[in-house]
Each structure stands twice: as C-alpha cells, then as structure tokens.
Length: 311
Image (cartoon, rainbow, N blue to C red; front, side, top):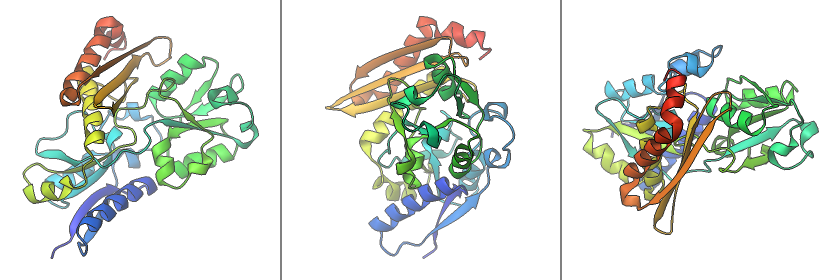
C-alpha cells in the first residue's frame, strides 16, 4: 500500500500537530503508513518583518495547499487560525479534531512571577512581546501603559528572549504551549472576556482535496462536531468582516447545553476603540450566527472603524 502523505510546516509546533494527526489516523487504521511532507512557507522564510506587512493571511498555508492541489500530499495539517476565511477552490476541511484550549497565555520573566494575578503582574511600562495585532490591540486597550514589542520566531525562540530578560512578558496561544509540553511555563491563562482569541485558535484544520472521497471518508472519523460547529461560526464571522492580518479582530464560539454562543470584537490597532458583541443561537445555524454577529459589529461602528483604517 502506498503511504499517505501529510503536508506540514517544519516548525516544532507544526510537526507536533502533524504527528498528532498521524497518530489519530493510525489509531483508526493500524498498519496505515503515514509520511510527513515538510515544507517551508512564506511566513517561515521571512522573519524580519511583521506578518501584516507580508500580505495578510495565507502566509503559512499557501505552499502547503499547493502540495495538496498538485498531488504531492493527500492531507495537510494547519493551525486553524492560519487559514484564510476562503480557501482555494478544490480543497476542503476534512476534519476538525477536538479543540485544545483556545485562550491566550501570559508568560513572565522570572522576577515578575510573584507580582499578582494575570496582567496585574506587569509593572507600568512593561515590555510585552507579541506579533499579533489582535493581542496588541486588546493589551493596549486594557493597559495603555504597556510597551508592545514585535516578536517573531517559533515558540522556543520567543521563550529564549523572555528568559534573557529582553522582555518582561510574552503572550502566546495556550494551545501551542500545551502541545509542546510547556504547560508548566504558563504563568496565567488570560480569560476570554479580557483577550478574545483569534478565530480558530486552539483548533487544527485537516485539509484535503474536495474530490478525494476516500480521504474525506478516512478523515470523517477524526472530526469532532462540537469543535467543528464552533469553528464554523467563528470563520463565518471572519469572512463577513473580510478580516485579514491587518485587522485587529477575534471571535470565540462555544457549544454548551445544545446552544451555540459566540462573542467577537473588532478594534483599532492602538486599542483606543474596541467594539464587542455576543450572540446565541442553535448550532444548526452556526454560520448564520457568525455572520449576524459580524453585521451587528459593522452596524454599531465597525464599518466606519474599518473604513478609517483603509480596510
């Protein structure tokens, strides 16, 4: 039997995620040969500029999706938050495995670890590293005194900068830290009511060709319906806002007791204005709910905000 090729980035986190999907596949089909096709993306190659200056979403997915389209791989594994709202024609998300913690995590330099809970541990004027416009916007809104500094590179590179004392804190996705075995390094999990996560944060997207019925059937066993329905609402919110890496926005959906709840925000990069809203509805209308939330924010000032930003 020919091996099943899985396309992935080569970062430690991306490889860990791809290996997790390989283990899931082999658990359901013992003896299945699964090989990883490791690729470098534009986002991996260019490390000296902010992501928003490199062309928006798709920086970490384009080359991987090309490997699917040209047949070098049957499956691709992405961090869901890296996927643009609209994917290339001919590809689909074949599975959304159970979502890891979608929240952001605060990591402090050693001398600050007893300074108080969460963001209260940061002294006035603290230097906080993040590459995310969303995080920078929300942090500036909550703590205008903070100095937000750019932070590129993989998780280990970012942690080294923190340990070296170049920064007072960094904010990273809790899911990535957990997957890489760095849970003990987390000083605080930031509540969603403070920092609304990125769309799809904590979830994996297992992508395949739409016409590949055999692979789609194989992936269906990996799918986690509660995670998929939450992601569907969040991505519909993103698509309705036509969000990109140049738009500070976020959304978080949760399915509980048969009801889907989604909250979202859009804001100015300097944190001076944040528009937030929340809606609830049946999970069968997940995409409609995400779209309705986005339209509500646009009507309540988001359209003017985005126009002012030239978006």
